[in-house]
Image 1: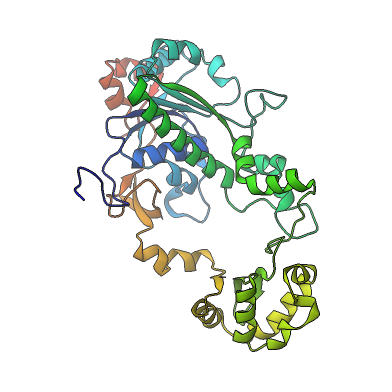
Image 2 (image 1 turned 90 degrees about the vertical axis):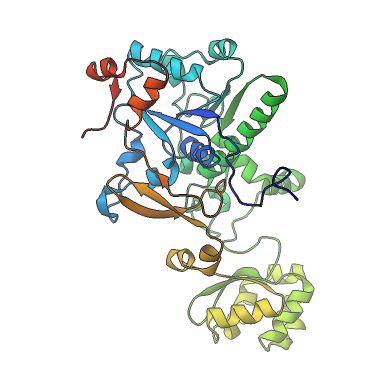
Length: 405
């Protein structure tokens, strides 16, 4: 098949070349989505306050060179413009940037656009080709519409915490920004669909997305169970609530995630660990019995699994066609063959000639050049010159910012 018809899977041919995205965002969801557009070839202009995106200051005490990992993960490949949007001239400059944009992303606090004098509906009338995405915490209607929120608050209020963790206690949040990152991918999908539609109709789109909606979507299967049965989900830790064995199981040097609840897999497991008597133990005959006696089942299995190392046992289970996962820590994951052979890491160039590895964007292709992390206001002069603004006047009046020498 020729390259005119299709491109090799995973290669990046600048699908969004020529598309300009204005990012009015901070923290994770919107910046991470905008970084995805940058990976696809879009010109992403990150408009920051003169003090910068707050995540620039989230430096890690364990990281060298005052690096802010949260900023690094979500902002490579963009151009940074620093503007004081509380000043009329700063706002006018932003409006000029918007006039030349294809997409605008914002996750300002509720009412933040109006307080800055931005009437999105009026702007969309003036620029009908524009797609504008606003991300809120709890949606535009209802009692929570004015609330601001972060990932773990949304996890708590959407039910995620209530179904995560061991059976007793307050429940756990997922150990990373799961809602923020899922929201970012939803933003990318919605914008790409809007641009496809614009190619057919010439019209942009107003898109509203909330972190709360994304959190509910992530739990679609669990909520379907609740709506069908009326039964509230119970926390079961690492175990699947409806099947067994499907749980974390101890080995001599760590843990595996064992999934052998289908009868052929259960039969193969008992023979592989030399415990055929478990097949006729009335506590474990059939899925329902194994779920009811889950604790006893895991205890019996660990009498055998604890005599093998994680890698030895996992290799044997995989060879027998039984699903298994090694419970790995970050150092093991980062240097695993899955990561290195598939080029799942990319380099990010930081100011000062520093280069760091990061997880490659899902929208990037293997072998792409390192992306550059912008300094605050690094591209202010360059971008404002493109719209004919008097950058030096704005800088002199402290309405626009540029990095020092």
